[in-house]
Length: 247
Image (cartoon, rainbow, N blue to C red):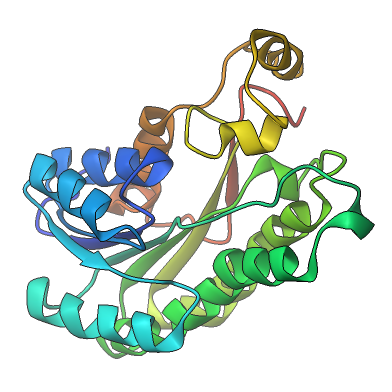
């Protein structure tokens, strides 16, 4: 279960948080991993830790994603697994108070990036008639929280995009799935909670039946399974990694 020996993978936003956890889990499972992050230094730190590769990439920019495809061909050769993990949020606010700039940035990083990576990486997967794509969505796309409206909407978009991609790419042997984590111990946690205090953490944890946040290790384990041959009949799934949050 979860054997990735001989496979190649790209993880966007892999310089920290869930992305780093996924990259580390992939490497332990035997994959050769390229970490792409807008923070190139962070990507290089994680890459050094797992004996992988690193690239600086703004996933919301077509030229930058095109350059990533060029670097990936040089570093990895064929790409077997692509993880769309890079994501951002806006600060909690009434929907009408979120600035247009913040709205545009959230949709560009959380939604447009999936379109751009599909443009640059699915043609080669289709030609080879195999591949696995994993989109990191969120419980926010299933059970939205107030005052994170446009972030919620971007993750709901990602879940629907996952299912649409799965249907279209299935005839080419490409599987597309998503993970829906509950908020976790990542750099985005204070933004989700509107701060980071013991009181805010306790209030948030009270909504999670298992009583803890998600971790990069939780996401790494689930991602490794879904991108492995052991999950060969699973596509179009959005798996909740949420301690029961969405029950």
